[in-house]
Image (cartoon, rainbow, N blue to C red; front, side, top):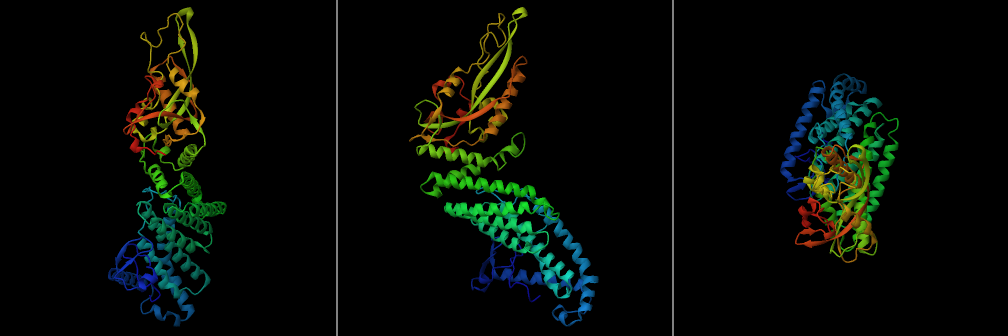
Length: 513
């Protein structure tokens, strides 16, 4: 019991920093969960913990033996006590923690800046796991042979690591200053706990890599982009190495998929850092654009929940953001003709369809090639996600007075009207943005394809004789528009095909360079 750390956090049970404990301040801050508490409260919790551990040991060890004097007892007797009285209790409780740890290891444990992750639920509190670790410290004098010592060491280190990781699941849920420092420390200590434990080497590498990634996040949030990129690269390398070591490893093979996700998250973080770097000027101001991108709240269920909450999408978004930044500095993006003062991104949709016209012997099929546009910020407008026609230049909304399929003579060449849109598309060519403001695209090409597919399905269901092929989303086009307060006015070339989304656009909610 004398080997226990001087003070323990009353909130999570973690050992408090020795240097801070040695100070004279009446307050101490936990290096694991980050909470500040009065020293007297930490001391009171330590007394309570010592009592609980002592009670557990007294029940596990035959009456009369004092652990402080156990080393004077014959080693054969100590071994017998451990195997017959202590080990059965350890095996049961340790089994629970190992199983719970395995479940925890199956989750990605990195969170992007300015976001939270509430999905991971641990089966125990950190205090429970830390308490079990101290029980192992208390009975360690009874472990005299190699097997018993390995069991005690494994139980202590794994429960310690488990407790630290539980604390990090709590930190994932709260976007507060300094959380990445706490997470980095917890990951690093957990990595040390796993090091040397047979079968857990990949876990040690994984959490060492996540510690580096968290340090990189802290550097990025403080504007040190160069250091952040170096740490991200090092962290990604550790995770890649951990993944290769999972082959044939039965203890932690469950980490394969979460490691893949964490590597992709780090790649998105690298894209974030490069975007901040490319914007130039004050990196902390540039981070505000990044913060806004990370802060959008998307539906968690329905048709769009999984796609919009997948962190992989951020890599493409930050890549497009970087291209927009370069275009303001002399680079080129596809810009349509026009004299607007703000460049608004749209996805170009290449749409092919066929329909029947005429009657009797004059009946024939007509094939049509049309262009449509989707505002690239449609993902932040839930009305667009629920009604794809409000996010598209709805070329089928303009019909002749006699109805869509009224061409008795078979002279119809189209049942849509997107000629103005086709002129906009054909005018787009690589150009510099110059002094014009540029709206950052907030959707990916795949998301635009999905919306276009939903639009096609909606049109086809309303027009039974209409046959549409799969739409092809091929590129981003930036169209010069006009600012009108915090609204956008589309150019007259749109005619009556201005998407409803444009009328709902609020410039204050967009990321504008």
